[in-house]
Image 1: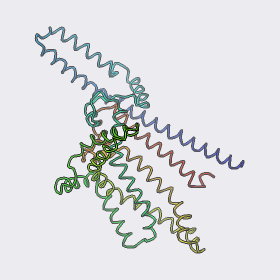
Image 2: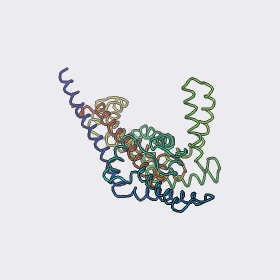
Image 3: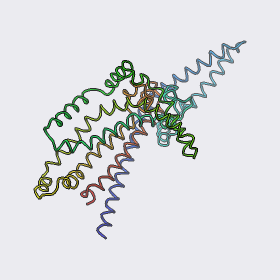
Image 4: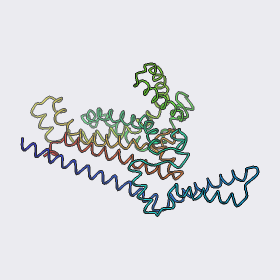
Length: 380
């Protein structure tokens, strides 16, 4: 009992150290991003452009009045508005203050998007808090990218060990060829071909996917109503789910097709290394049933490496695929990244970097816990 207590304390210390290390990594990533966007003057140029555009619009509005105000009155109003905007965006503060302020506000997602393009991707009107924008687009990326990755992972985990037992067979060679073929083709290129064939030529899939905003929002509203006990929302849920499947089946199929080969090949490589180990050969020589060998000596050993690339891949999928989502005109995390970077919306970029890094850090910590459970060598 005392030994188990010592081991448990040691494991807890290791996990606590991992948590501190990953948290420190998250802080460093956010701080460096804030320094790059703010300390280099990148956001200053963008914000000055926004201020100049608003001042020009206000000037035109004032001069279009009938009768127009005196020139000195126009200059006074424009000067006051310019100073107000400078204070609003914090451009009157020193650079180090703005870097630290952006860093602290990013950790709590207390940021506001400064571009209408970001609001358009989210499908709402500005002003728009960055946290709200991410909460809106994240389910769309989960529907398109994450679900596809889950499907690919499940198939890879099931087929990997099966193929490893048939190394050199026609099935094995076919999987290797398929993996090489899909790895050589960018997902966005496969997406373009798929839209052309199934959307424009065969007309069995949509050619534009921006409408998915409406169905995801409607489905979320209907689920909220249903959870409140109103069963009348059930029929609405079925209708929205049908429309959502129609708009999402081609993107999910494309991402699954493009990622499946690499995942199966990785699972196969791990399984092949294990099935040829001496302890597996010895277990077979002792006459153990193949099912028992597979369960005790193979599955448990390959579970750790396979879960590693599956969980990290799922964390990576949360960030979305920028080019692929742009090709589908799919308003998810990747498209939001693209819009924010294109227009220089630094608060949104900071928020996206923070959220995607946070998800990755959480995934890494979950893996640490899983390894402690699966691998006795870690506990000892």
